[in-house]
Length: 499
Image (tube, rainbow, N blue to C red; front, side, top):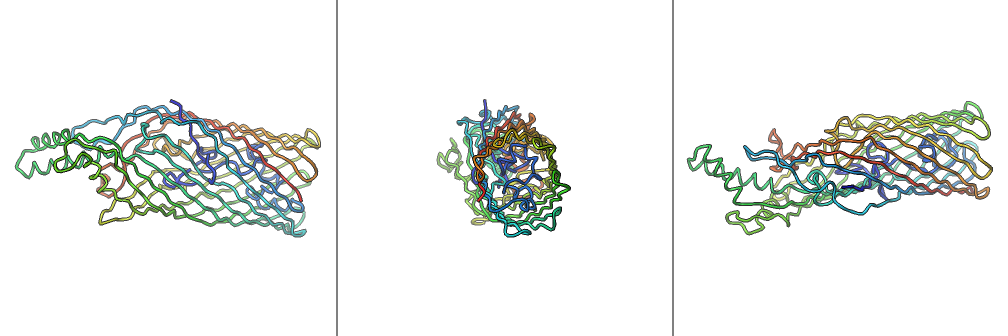
């Protein structure tokens, strides 16, 4: 079955986010296009600095812009991903039982969708030395829904991650060769995660343990106690899944700097750094077990199994701490002749800062649920891109670029369904059409191919609410095992105006 999913590149409870959502377009949860003019060269143009979107790539590039300029646009993301299940299993807590398949589909069924992520940039030359700027863009995000009955539902049902970054900036031109830039970031994030709860396994485990201890207390041998406990589980016949919903939001603050060196009128180099941003997303966790039923738990009504599960998972406040990764870039731009220009960029992303995502739930009525943990053994990553411009005429400029981007995931065991990430290759084309002296339009198309990826992710917390060391936790204990085939298409449109 084909899984069509969106995500800006991802998650609170899946990790970090975009105001309009799309699939991880860049490495990790980053959304990989904050400028349509940049997209046309596969974002190799960090040292080009020909419009106000240089605020994102390198604020020192503001020093190259005259007067007051505006750039605003949006990138449409059309994702396609196919998931094939290769034997996902649910937790087994009853001694002597073998692993059971989760059952379900290869990813639910929902119509393919496309989403758009906007950007806005404004620059103003204050004097011969100082330029000011303001940028608004989507740095992170994800939107993905597998449906209620897919094979990996106990790891994730859906995630919706959104963010926006407001980035006031300025540049200082030291002389004809050296320019510096600085910016501040106010970043808002909001996210929600839905995960099916394996109430059947959890309730059955509690029934088994209760019956087993009662039999032993009554003088039964261990073998008889085991048999009676298994019989009690069989008589209860618990069925159905619960649903956990977690959401949260927060503001965070950071900064970015840039430097640009003009070797001569045709060649320049740039360096840029964007800080990490720490945020604590606060919200709530809610649990529903309306579809969990039983046939015969002594002293409980037909839906008593749902009541048992709910007593262990009361609605609570929730919090997750998130640190978005810092980035550092080095780039160049060279005008070969009046028609051709070449450019390149190398970017390092400190994705290893994205540690385990730990969702903390408050104690309610004396019931402590323990943390919900999404394990991420991430590494730092690299992105390399090369691009070119061709000035066809006074009104038409054509662009092209290629890029390779590394995934932060180190093994199949780290690949959570919220981010089925892998190394990817960008192929981009773009164009700028000059309407008149004041205005122009940029268009861009990118095809991003992801390497085929396998997932073998296991939740270390089981439905009993305890880890192997006895520590309290919240989880399902199952394993998601399957494979992904993914590609994305990006279509960008941007309007530029010089006042």
